[in-house]
Length: 384
Image 1 (cartoon, helix red, strand yellow):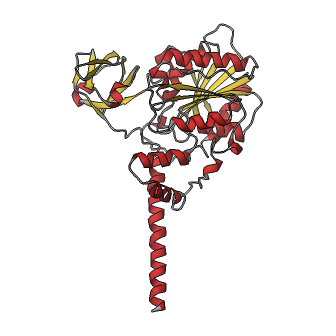
Image 2 (image 1 turned 30 degrees about the vertical axis):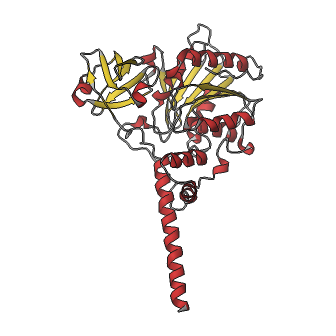
Image 3 (image 1 turned 120 degrees about the vertical axis):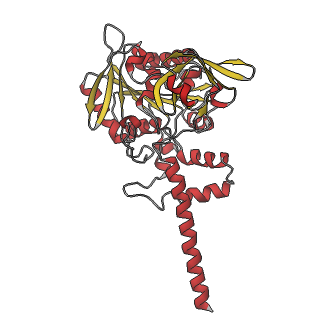
């Protein structure tokens, strides 16, 4: 009888560990999937006008304020769409740029906040250089006299570097040179599937050489701009490869406290909090070869021990459904002497610029003037 109980106990333990590991592996695979954007849910199009407009049912992402882009499921041009116009419960967006032939055939496509595919789409001159193993767009400032301030823009998970181009003209107008690199999990590689993300724990090593390149090319001060996961990567570089020339960081929809982000996503999916915590506890059990242990408290902004002391502007949309704005509020409240918090009402994840480009540009310019003038005084909180 005792042997039977022992066998039953071992079986239950093995079953529990196996279930925990599988649950954790499932969560990990979803969170770290660099191809998630490529498989994003498509939006059905109600009508495509003759090279003029696209009409949708007036709900969800299609009604997001500001300009967006869309590409047909089968490919074709990236269509640049105007801000939404509502009529009879439907949303109409004018096609500002691109040939909608493929979208007219498919009748569905994927919306995004990207408004161009390379710097030339924004009227910016650029050259392509290779730094380490990564491709980098080098974009000079617009002023006749070059500034010694260089800006390094880092995109987010499941995205291409074109994600950050919306913000580059703001810095170019101040004469700053911008560097826009890829990193190991970028989707810029085309058909080649990138490896799973390490939530910034490894990716920062691809960005640190870009910092050295800027300093060797004439930069006296460096500003980082990190979007979503890019914000976490930026803070990892600042912490692990400190340089006195780093003047500050702009973090857009920052994905920093990944444990809280994952728990919020599981809660949104209907998982009870005890179940969500149980699933998360198996996150590191069944790891694929080469995947590191993710120690939550080692990630940026998860505790005072991981906070950086550089001047920081956090820009976050109050309608962000994937990275709760409350996490940024907590981070900013912990360091009011270093962090300026900018909230954008109605903006979804990484769509703060799209929702209000004028206010985005004004706030960033004012902050840059403050820090590049060697004044580290923190601005009053600007809420658009």
